[in-house]
Length: 417
Image (cartoon, one colour):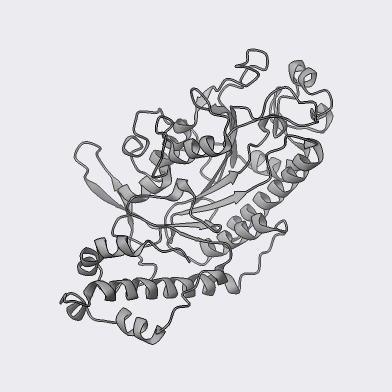
């Protein structure tokens, strides 16, 4: 169970006691959207219980975008990858130049239905090839900051969700990723629903405090801040109960891949179907750092990825939630165009991003980078990743992007009007 530090609780305790004296779990309030950047006016937006939901899917390690979205018709691709390149005859063609890896067959159904898009050549200026630094750049959306203290989703929470649902974001993992970290809002993170649970002493006291009346709680006194700590812990207990209630009886109708990735997607589907008010969910899939013997490893990763996304969207359709959920994928960088001597690929730069959902236009978006006009062996980006974020923030989460991204980035046209 992840909670803010005692210092943060103490700093905010009195103000939060006055604003929300009983701190019930999963308050059915709405997030707020900045209506005007200049004056900061606020408008109510539906919570994830009845409004739009974003699912962020991280492909950790540096996914080989050229073997995921394959430029099968380009001779330069096959020259650069004589043994690693994907055979054009097995590629699932999206147009006369690119197609999907053969193990992503389930995703072709989403493209055929018009509920999937791929954005080509996504990156940023002066790319960094360090896993840690590049991940920080993608998650913070602040390439010019050497030490990032918040993520782009976290700043969305800070700007729009203060005073609303105490848990607008949930990450499936042991720690909250930088992308979800804000200065004001602390999302939840757990690997399994049963692991997110308050196990401290004196539960009966916490329950009594959680039921305290506003008059009792707002009276202040020496105990007020300590009581806040107790009640915050109780809120975690009640939130845990809510999560367990909607996930324990979940029986997926589709087959998820085995392992943490499949379980994470399955749990997110259960929480969405259970009506939690969470706005953003985050799932990570690792193993993409394929320096050697890439063929077998990447083929297996593509199989797991295709199977997981297919099962998730089958559930969203069955639940009737496909039109109000949007999924986006990202990786910290792509791989070099040229295969290396170990049958793998080294750290690169630009790579594709995918978006899925009933609101997606369904297209191959942007220009594919040249495979011959390279930057020290790497693809030159054709789309800034912050323009993808801007589209999601403004056109999906209905929040101005500039205060969150710190600049003007033209939103891509990804969603239906």
